[in-house]
Image (cartoon, one colour):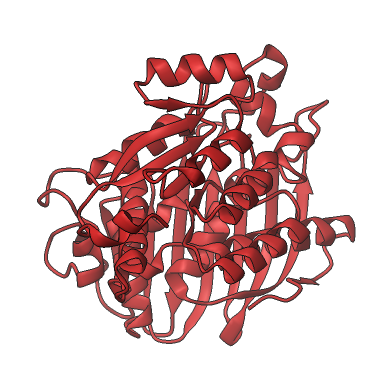
Length: 392
């Protein structure tokens, strides 16, 4: 890391690079907005497309000062500069995550990577070893963990307000792939239904991993076994578009997960319900500023972001007063803010704010790949109970 990075204050903007997120990409713009929201990053370098010409043109259009045609060129050049990037955001299709992350980690650059971590468990485990060897920060953008009321739910569960957790129900329902949209040339549908670019899971990898991560994040429990049925409903589609499964968690908790991209009438319906021996919680992404709390034998209560009962974890993730809705972009920004704190702390030789450490990292990415592998194996074996091999 350049010496001047270690000497400047923690509120200096971190120099950020981006790989992917060019013409026609959805998630790249989201990452760019999130990175700037709290004024902790400056996007100074990018390789935005696999097509060098498109990459250079897109960087010029976005006013990014240093443009590269290839990510390999970018990693080498930036690592050699005294003012090179300190972190890189990887927002490519899934099949490029591993090569990009490995290249930048080996160049000594912190990584912020979109999910899922890789397309194979073997690659995920290799990245985990590289992160351990280099000691660099690695963030995985399971953005739903950044919502204030999700962090409120986690704080309540870990404080014992629900008692021992018994049942976890999580679902993520969409309808945008109810027809063979990929055959129309729509870019997002095209790569997400292509096993060469998406990996072995369709809806499983795209949104099932979000649901799985959310359940583990809020409860603090790990999943040990799954019994799954993976289905492709749209004729001719090469990857799944619907997944249903049972889960066995640590400490005896049981769960169910449903992820579908062919559920008519659903836009982005991510919903989590957690039931303990003393109370239950319910949160929905489409109404993210509310958390329903149901103590056993008492009336249900709706906790609102910033209202009475809001705890320290939720308050830390808020940017505006109660009554002003916060949502998807702010949740993404929270992860970027947490990672900026981790990176700044490492540069300054101090301990980071402990709350910043809840952001998903390399271990969560590996766990997500164990989940995908176990679900697919279970489905191939007529929904037999299948262990998440090596699960923590």
